[in-house]
Length: 404
Image (cartoon, rainbow, N blue to C red):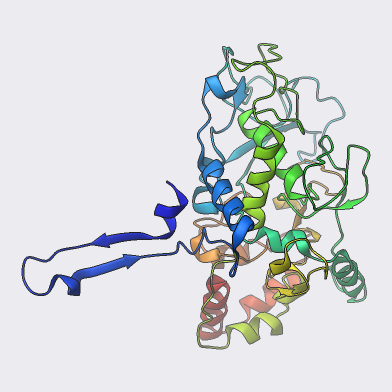
């Protein structure tokens, strides 16, 4: 669907009797797919171009395959929210069931299932049924609206939160995931000068904050989820058929496509919020949900997008890694993120989501809160406080979180 249709759709319903204007219904801005408030000119044009690219469905003739998960960005992030696409991860573990084994040679195609195949491939990458001690977990792709705010957060804010949490004296001790830029250099953008040798970057994107920048995140998604190669990720992924190319010889997309798609995500607004009456906001602070989900973080003063520069970004996340306990473990280590450590999910647009937590196992906000508890979880004391609330206060808190 084009951005024009998406943003300014008019439905006129004519009644059989009476004034037809009484039945006029106007469906305007999609709150989960809106550009930054006040966006104009070239950046708005870029947003609209990226909106189309985000929904584009790739076909074999356009480089889809050899193996893939889904055939478009929008099919994994419908309405820019999380899902319905999922990614199954697999890893061979030690006898304890949670520690990754040193030998992963029985998984030569990597740790992600990519069951679909195209572009000359005869089979996909599926979960093997003949490997002992294979741990299989699910990841639900995160929502993408509001991600420009995350990109613009001043790293000093993250360092401040690390220090403050270290001084708390309780279980809550977040850390920055220090990551490497994982793509080839991208000279055609204004946001960084990183290349493959850039290390120690503050991770912000991905469920374990395993990416530092939106273009790296985007190039990885094109390659990892659709097997669409680009100048940033020029190689096809290993596959059972040993194919080094697909039905589109060479690179499948150019650098501009990666950058426009990344900028579309960068320029998506946080859906408008209406905070309900009640004590939910105060309770969120009182029981210290805000220790890991602070309401705002300050952005850098010179961020290239003026609308994101020098403001209090209302993301409700510290963007830090926290240990969520044994029951949340997936045995996957990504830079400084251990098996049981996950990035604090930004509480953005929760009312548009249908599942919660990294694997989607919670179907309500209350379930998601309660699932924060478990052996070894940093959140146990906070969840005890939540469970001690009376029914009215608990409902107020849930209503507040849902409104974000």
